[in-house]
Length: 54
Image (cartoon, rainbow, N blue to C red; front, side, top):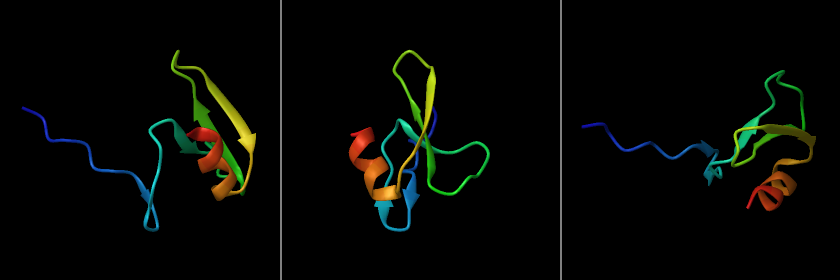
């Protein structure tokens, strides 16, 4: 039996399941994973990215 997934956090804020950092580590860029598995990279502050992802 596998262990439950640990919540992904940035500081004290939990990240949504579909929001990831930019693969190129650019500042203020985020990666959104669509339900079909495709990705969309967009530029937004962390707070804006949280609103977009939820």
